[in-house]
Amino acid sequence: MTLRPGTATLGPVNASAHERIEAARVALAAAVTRPMQVMEVCGTHTLAIGRHGLRAVFPEPLRLLSGPGCPVCVTSGHDIDQALDLARRPGTRVTAFGDMLRVPGASGRTLEAARTAGAAVQVVHSALDALELARTSPAAEVVFLGVGFETASPAIAAAMRIALERRIGNFSVLPSFKRTPPAMEALCAAPDARIEGFLCPGNVSAIIGTRSYEPLAKRVPCVVGGFEALDILEALVELCERVRDGRPAVVNRYTRVVRDEGNPTALALLDELFEVGDAVWRGLGLLPGTGLHVRERYAALDARRRFGLPPSTADDLPPGCACGAVLRGVLLPPECPLFGSRCTPAAPLGPCMVSTEGSCAAYHKYGG
Ligand code: SF4
Figure 1 (cartoon, rainbow, N blue to C red):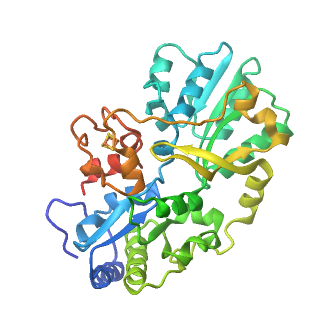
Figure 2 (figure 1 turned 90 degrees about the vertical axis):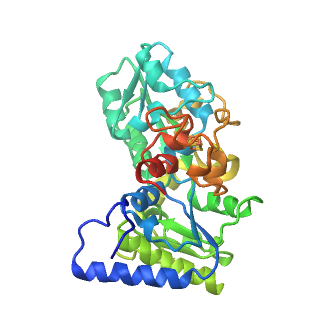
């Protein structure tokens, strides 16, 4: 396959895969017979599309929007401010994934700056790492900043249950979990967006199963795709053909990983620890039913209840930041006036430029 000069390559593929990629490219061009807007919901897809250089082979009328599927990007600034508040309290240590340290709160401050100023903030690779820190530091209150979609929340739920079973009483989670399908429903209903179909995340779908998209797929096609170049192209062909022909349905193009019923063990764990509630999404505001709240019987593990913090209710973006419009699929990242000038990965202004899976960061690194 020939790519446009200056774009990334598709990487080493064997001849058969190469031929399939070329066939998918031709099929995609045939499917997109008019201007068409579809959305990849997942930050991992956004990153993979950039890394594989796939935008270079998309047909001109296809506008592939990048949705709110980066957990770092959509974590409310209010939640970051609450983590900052906890980090300043004597005897409390706040633990978080590394990307979260650079995201500004609604106050404009970051956990990274707080750590530099002496606050107790520590990067961990998992909730289990935070739990281990709690076990080995019994005099400290260890709080884990629990962000993520259905891919991350089961592992955090597991750490919470282990904390209870092993009576590690100085561990808690500041919950900021998000649910994917209801957020997609909300995006579809937004008056300023015109999303005609969704490329659904393979990783989230492995947990929740394809059935979770069935209500939405009565209106727009939802195609689950994996993360290799061929996975993405073939899923997009299926999606765009269905948009073209007006045939909404859920289609699983990642059958080697995703099942209709999802992962029952992970779903049971989520149901045991959490209940559905509202969530504030950065740039999108309060979306009913899109969050997971800690159930009453696990209240001791909920940092908000434990430390008397109010629920997240409002959110702010830095002045001029168009992340809300980017996350709703109204703008592509380069259409933000600050993109690449006042906002870069080295000096991010908005949350979509912070994480490697943020749409603005991916566009900045790999181009459009
Ligand atoms: Fe926000 Fe920066 Fe993206 Fe603009 S380029 S939408 S300011 S993150």
